[in-house]
Length: 125
Image (cartoon, rainbow, N blue to C red; front, top):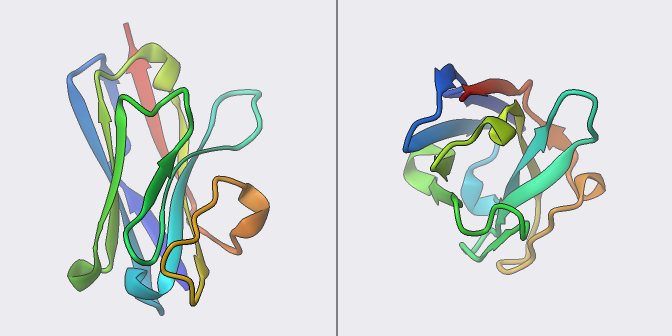
């Protein structure tokens, strides 16, 4: 499975940003997928995940502003970030693992064995 993120930008705080992750090799219908963030000097943290069947889970710190979704026909998973803040500045990574479960989701990095190269989001106040 190869993952390619896009959509990262450097910008002033804006209302909305959408990141894209395109999967090749396996479609999102066979994958549990997630977004992780890693700020400067910080460890990688799971913020949103979507199960093969569409169930989602979020880290408590982003639950009200981040939305993960997917389009199996486009092999794409999205992360929408509302009300961007300077604290959202980080490298954003897409991750995936093949699963037979329709409902299993995880925000733990060790559960994922496929990773994208990351896309940088920088938010200035």
